[in-house]
Each structure stands twice: as C-alpha cells, then as structure tokens.
Image (cartoon, rainbow, N blue to C red; front, side, top):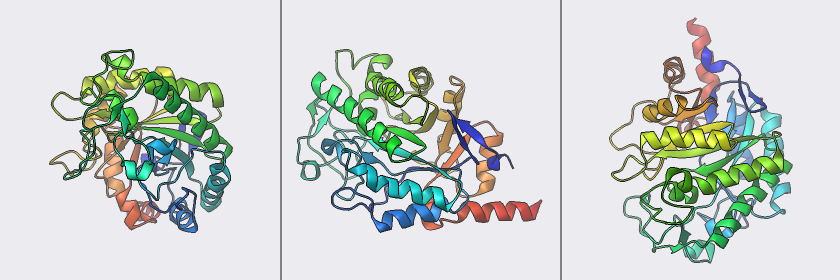
Length: 337
C-alpha cells in the first residue's frame, strides 16, 4: 500500500505516510517539563508503526502558554527534559518526531500566563470554543512581535539540541501566528497587516530565522490554518498563495488544518474533510502536504492518498484511543492481499 511507502521531508526520511497529528497530552509538570506520563504516551505510539509523530504544542514564551500542564520550550533548561522524550521515541520504533512550537496569543488566559493577553489587533479571538469568553487582547507592538519571533527561533534551536528530527510552527487553530494570518483578527495597517504577504510576515520571518539558525539539519513544518471557513476570513485562494509563500520562506512541509474554525469543519465528519484545502495547497507547492481530520481506517487514508488529496495523512484521536492502530491496520491489510 502506498501509505506504507517512505517519503522525504527536507533531509529527513520518514518510513511511512501516517502521522500522529499534534494533540496536547496535558502531561507536563507545573514547570512545563516532560514527565513519566509524557514519555509513556509518546513511547506507546512510537512503537505502533507510525511514520511521524508531531508533539502537542510546546510553548515558546510564558506569555503564550495555553494550559497549566503544557510542555514548554522557552528556556535552555527545557532541553535536557525534552531529550528524554526524543530518546524514548527513537528507541521505541522507526518513527521520527517533530516538536510543534507555539504561542497562543489571545487564545489563553492571563491567570495562566500572568501577563495581559496580546494579539495582532485589539479584537476578540474568533476561534474560541462555544461558550468560551476571553478579554480583548492588547495590540502587539513591533518590539513585542520581534520578541515573539526570537522566542520561536530560540525554541527551534532548543528542539534541535534536544534531538528532534524536525520542528513545526503552529500557525493554525486561532493561535497567535494564525491570528496574524486571518483577516478576522488582524486589522493592522502596518507591514504586519493588510495584504496576505503582510499577514504572513511574522510566520515567514520566523521561518527564515529558523533556517538561518539550524540550516537544513532539521525538517521545518508549518501547521497552517489555511482557511477560516467563515465569512470575511481567510479563503482557499489565500491557502494556496499562502502555502507558496511559506515554501519560499523555507518550509519543508505544510501540515494543513483549519484557521478560526480550528480543527472542526461544521457539519462534516467524513474522512479528510479538509481535502479541498489540501488540494488547493498541493496545486501551489512542491513540498509534501499533510491532511488530517476524520480518518479512522487505513483504507480511508489510502483512498485520500490515491486521489491526490495529500502526501501524508494525519490522525490524532483514533491514536489517543488505540496507540497500536497503525500496526493493526497494516496487519489487516496484509492478510487481505
């Protein structure tokens, strides 16, 4: 089956096309360090015949921490803790592991961060969960934008030192980089707002900074919230053009998902419900594209690959319930041939 074929992401070779999509495990210590529970969670999935594991988001700066139990990569002290994780994954199986790094921007709580909420503009975050409320964020100054960019770049360097095979910038699901990209939350009139190029500027500047600091030694992915699926939000045309800009800035992989709609597409539960987005992105890029959402069987994943909807298929919740799912699916496929 094509799903069990190798694929290159930058200079990293992945053993098959199945990806454990990023999902926060809520197993970090109060200080944001790896715990035995963290190790056990990822080790179980690394031994289950996945090609690639993407961690739940690691916080790059305390001002963007999303939940109290979130793992952090905001200081050099985090490196040794995270190295425990990468060593456990690499010992358990062939899976590669990418560190997803993130800043939540206005999608957090000052009681968690100890700091005022900030975002590209002083407007309500449109990606909050139903019933969730949050204060209006403060509009970020250019100095704050530079501070966050530097935090992402330093986090990528730490990820490299901790032994990760790649790093993924979280620019989806209404978090900070996605807030800059979406016209629903970015009303700026400077070089970080307005045009698509300007709304992606913070992300492309981070990409170039990461490339300059780690070269081609690490694969670099972007979890791209490419389309909001909301009136006035980012569009499929933005998705295609934006992905091309991310590729030009140094991305090796586009891990496509929703923007202000988060990882949900209202009224859709079919396998690969974001495939219109990934097809648009694939038409504009040469780098591989990941499609996640609604995939529960290897047959569904294979069908999406065969129709050209993506190059890799991501799953999260099915792996949360059954870490050995890919291994069991492969065995079923072999018995049926």
